[in-house]
Image (cartoon, rainbow, N blue to C red; front, side):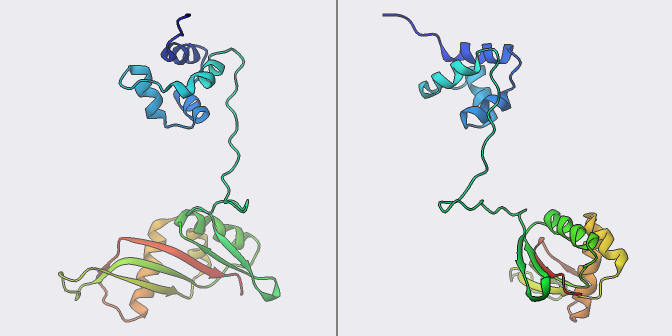
Length: 195
C-alpha cells in the first residue's frame, strides 16, 4: 500500500508557487481563515479537498472565476447594494435600495442624465426624540426628504454622510418631530426620476 502525501504539503507547495491563501480559499469554497488553520496545523485539512489541492499545487494553475450567484429561476441574487429599478410611464424610473452607497451611485447616474429628483424617502431605525421615554424602544420612521437643492444632490451623489444627516434633520424638523433626535441607521432609499 502506498502512503499518500499529507494535504498540508500540497498547500505549502501551492503557496511556494505564489498562490495566496485567499485564492486557495476561493478555489476550495472555504474561508481564508480555514486555509490558514490548515496551514498552521490548528485544523486538519479535510480529505475531500485532495484533488483540488493537488491541482492548485501544479505550476500554471489559475484562480477560476466564480459565476455570479443566482436563484433557482436563474435570476441574479439581490444584495443590499443592488438597487431595484422600476420603469414608470413616460420613461421615468423608480429607484429603491437599502444601501447608502448604492443610493449615492444611482443618484449620481440619474443626476448625470439630467433627471435628478428633488425628493426621496428614507427609513430611519431606532428613531428616538428627546421626549421619548427611555424605557420604550426606538421606533421606525419613514421620512420624506423634500426640496433638495442642486448642491445637496451633488453632495449626496458623492456619498457624503454629513449632507445626508443634514437633509434628514431638516426633513424631521419639517415633520414637527423634536429637534434633538437619534437613529441607528438609515436604509430603504426610494426616489423617482420624475422632474
